[in-house]
Image 1: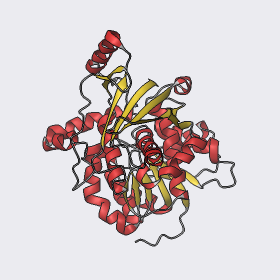
Image 2 (image 1 turned 60 degrees about the vertical axis):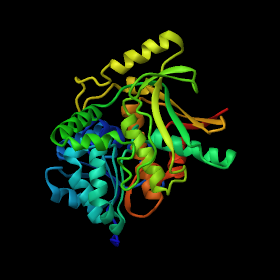
Image 3 (image 1 turned 30 degrees about the vertical axis):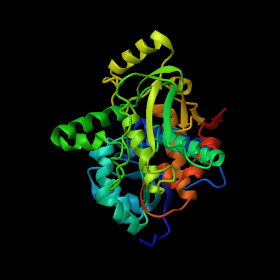
Length: 391
């Protein structure tokens, strides 16, 4: 393990001049600048002038340090990683701009958190960097935004109560998006575009991405629902439609179970769908949603909704645990901002604080496996998320 020297910064927000990175910086400035336990943090990006503009725009203290680093300059990433305990990065698509930063953090033994929803690249990083991260003590934590924290931690929360109530985890869990206002970010759309390009270049990648166990090397669990077609769900009494984030979220839930030693069972079956409504109207709505393009191609990385739109956004996700004898248990996760920006930026920032406060072994992690209940507590206390059981 790398023996870390005293670091200049607790947290560096890399990509602070981008839309989501700016929101992360704004959150840290608003919520932690005046606290006695405030982390020492810095803003990083390609241009010192633009960083200075954003620092003023988000109301960060004038002495908030600025760090110039560029994804096209690996030496600058190495230097940045060596200065911080934690690097938070919003610079995606990660398959284009993330590889050298992960390598830099692994080499420096620096904790890392991102918003990645690109399972093909994540698997490459697991294969390439996990052994080195374990050796250096670097905690590399992917998917620390809407994909996939509410789902990853939602299943963790549900299963903990399932064990308390029934003595064993639920072997079948359904994630159902009950309500949501606010769409995907421009970065998410760009990431999907790059993933499709990667599949065109390497068709075998499609087979990997099709598997719910793409992020559990050496382990393949039972057959999982595809979630690709509308269906009636007797557990909710509604029709359900495919959920665009399910292909990444389901993989992360299974990776959390895998990393923790399968406390939810090696036979866990998990899927995610969007609830519509009852009867023929619900069926028609589900079928229309299945055919619709969930992404607006006009939204580009760096674009985003207004403050009012972010604050009016929300999400409500239901989790249902089912046992073979018909017993069920239900829990939900709600967020008080739009999922793609407002809530995501708060989740990434609080993941950074949690990485400072909660130590653990190096490796390539999910938020649920590494931070678990500690992160749930932080998100509930500070970031507008609610985790609750439903009777």
